[in-house]
Image (cartoon, rainbow, N blue to C red; front, side, top):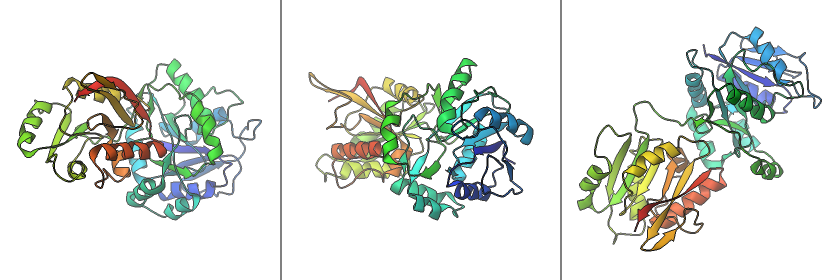
Length: 385
């Protein structure tokens, strides 16, 4: 039995499809408000619940009612059209252990065309979901949330006008949690939740809004694996020395994976070497390097940087002689200046082997941004070339 119960307010035209997904995953469900759903062994319905003036179930009423309807120690409040993947449920169960201290975990959704989402509804394994996200998924901006995990019997005093949709509830919940001193974690990278594509007209105003103030992030890190995978493409005679330089102690939380590459090989030789190394990478972060290497102190800085929310990729500045190249240069990415979550690189098909290293990194950055990734520009000069 999972240690969380899924809660949502009825009202979406896509509720039935989402509820079928929840049922297939074996989730305990509390659905509030009038709907066409039928109660099942895993689903409780409460139609008579106070509503806001906008005819949405009230957040406070849902949280209070959930105390009497479920003994699960955690509540997962989701959009009424949200679909979860099997891996998302596994990762949520790790965050919702009974012994965890009180915290708030929030996340955004991947958007897919409605028909594609319906086609996936019968998938019981992770593979089809991953393939669909890689092919068509676009991540919502950091001002639009689709789920929140919170302790049961907490934060019950929501104002009567506040609806239970995560889009409305998350800002208030975050403010309350921070007032209480709870950690507020953003976990979109670790918890893949999907919704039908949103109308494009909704997005500009959401991007202009300010993201909530989170205190940390949850990444899809495997226990016992290094946090960071450093992929090095360099001449064969340099490889052994590079490993000793970049990882002088085995206790360091990163791995160095080297592959041979020569400057007079084909233009795609460096990207091919990176892809070969990527296949063996275990870290949730990836740093592709070529003939120039950053100082060792930057490795710890990178790990701290990605512990902050709203960082899917990071780009550093660099120096060529006396000339400073800024981190936000829209036209050039030098090998060694871009670090990314491994999931984003794999999702976009790895490094383009038809291009040289600079062009491949520039293209990867652009494709990631178009799909909803968030880039942090860091003015520190990580390389001198």
